[in-house]
Length: 195
Image (cartoon, rainbow, N blue to C red):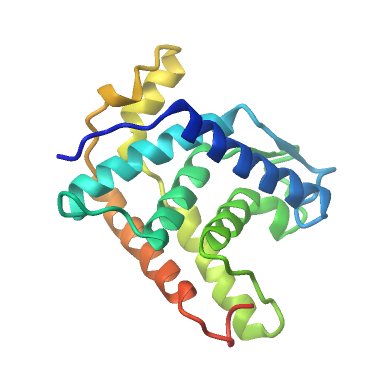
């Protein structure tokens, strides 16, 4: 089992990065600011969730003394974003377009690509179809591993992060492996899909 330590400074730095990306998606029009609410208070929670998920992943798959690679970080951060849903459509059952319906998945994808220093290219049906399938995989990721942490948050009684001894839930294994594989593909230069 790996040792867990994450500083408040590291959490706040990551919060700032993700908050700026989220605000940028709305101000640029990539996400419809008139039809979505950015619940910024969820960003610190999803960052904490990410670090807990990362610790559980390391205990599951990473040999002692090794660190997580950027592709794994991108995938696990994306899963945490989708679980905590920082964006909320104003009319959740009446989404007008993909950006509104999949706002959290789009945010997760953009953040993951950012970690990999990659960007989306949407010209052409094959590229669009690929990214739609990636959004579908993200939407299916439930991060049940984080249920004890989320239950404590819902009760208003979160514990210090170091006290959680989470293990990867069997229902999360496929989603985690799938997203890591997708981000490994994306991290490899491929002009057909990426910019």
